Amino acid sequence: MSTMSSPVEFLELLAREAAAVEFEGPLVAARAAGMPADRLAELEQAKTVALRVRALLERRRRRETELSGLYDTVSDLAGLRDLDDVLRAIVHRARNLLGADVAYMTLNDDERGDTYMRVTDGSVSARFQRLRLPMGAGLGGLVAQSGAPYVTANYGEDARFHHTGEIDAGVGEEGLVAILGVPLRLGSTSIGVLYSANRSARPFAREEVALLVSLAAHAAVAIDTARLLAETRSALAELSAANTTIRAHSSSVERAAAAHDRMTALVLRGGGVEDVAAAVTEVLGGALLALDAQGRLLARVGEIDEPDRADIVEAVAASRTEGRSVRRGPLWYAAVVAGAENLGALVLRPDDELVDADQRILERAALVTALLLLFRRTVAEAEGRVRGELLDDLIARPLRDTDALRSRARRLGVDLDAPHVLVAVGDDAIAATGSARQRVLSWATTYASARGGLAAARDGRVVLMLPGQDAGGSARAVARDLSRVTGRPVTAGASGPSTGPGTLAATFHEADRCLTALGALGRAGQGASTAELGFVGLLLGTVGDRGERDVAQFLTVTVGPVVDYDARRGTALVKTLEAYFGVGGSLARAAEQLHVHVNTVTQRLERVGQLLGADWQRPERALEVQLALRLHRLRASNA
Image (tube, rainbow, N blue to C red; front, side, top):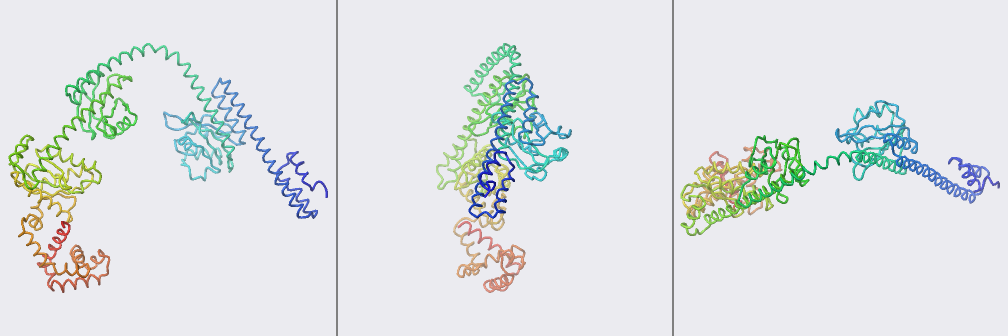
């Protein structure tokens, strides 16, 4: 057997750096010579090992070339004279080391919010060289925005990127297909993108990505070094202004000390938000607005217009996030906060530019404003508790000393002998969380106090006692206004008017039953009084055992047989009747609502006729049946 058909030949191929396809030659020759299978297997194994060695040598050669290129780049940086020359050298090396058709670099433009072409190598298209990429658009815009490398073997067909007409036209004119882009990073900040691109489809290996990342790191260092040199050149100019800055700082510190003393004195003597606003403008000049958490005006000093609500919300959110005052155009905003709670904002339009110490004055004023608002709220909450306890005592049974109750009411400015209506607010106004329930109670307390009334939480309800005689109007006003506050429909039932402390408990229970009736009658989200509920309202207003017996007897006579039949047999005759009347007597629509066949509805109604009599659908009897069904549902919901 010749040596050319032995493993030695693979060593000779390695020695002369033969192409990978040539390593098949010894095997082809051995098969043609009829070499045994065991020898063929040996040659196959030798070929595999030889190809692995060849690949390793190839990677090492490529790595040596890459390291040489990186070394040259570092050398250029060490002798940095002109930034453009260094960046051009880096882009040129990127093109050569990756064997790419084109290499180029874009830098971020913070003022315009996009990226622009800085250096190109191998480009032939003027349009491509003038491209600007919006953040997030195209491969480069996405790299600049995300700070992560991206690669595509065929950009035009890659749906991961946001294609725009301008970018695709430039890339198409240049003829680029495969593109690799890596970020230029300074610390955690991305300042641009370095690219390598081909005019034909080509996958980029992981080693190529790593190489381009290394070159991008050197380019970022070059850019930062140039920036530092520019900063160094401007240092002398800055030092020349240091004395002026120190004098200005000394003056601002004196202003801050004076402002601190004034605002401390305001708090000690019980001043208000208006006094804080006046103190700030006297120290800093200009005009100032103090706003609450809903953007309502608390105080105004000087000529200043209220900003748009959206601008206030954005600026206050930024101030809370940054923990200091922020500037938006000619205005400075300082959030008024207590812990995580937003209480409002101070908006200052100064006459002159604010230095840091002046900003601290505005921020200290916001802190003092928060303290004053919290103190005002604490006082209001304490008064609210006193008012709530009084109302709770008034609607309790048995009623305690009425003269003492009248005396307590007079101290709160409430005349118990004047006509009052009681409004009960439904559970639909109170979310599951305690904070939401407290918010509703706080609103009710403020609402009632402003009208000379009382509010309290009672039996899972929020109840308001309001002066006046229009129970229905009061219920509708409470439902409407509280719905706006909670952002959800609110049901309110009312009763009255009531005069004297002795009648308030019964009036409250009537209002509570009215609230329940509104839900049972399908009027959730509305406000009404007992008197406005018609026949049902009269029944609800009935007091004593006689009234209860009358209602029970009416139900027994009218729909009792049907209710009893359902209870014994587990049928749904009552439900069928409600559906039948609810759709205006249409068998088909009732069947659709009940999810049964029309024949089933017909059979059930025939059974109803057997139980109530053949004339149950005559107008006068049908009305009684419908009223009885409503009352039956109402009694079931109160059970």
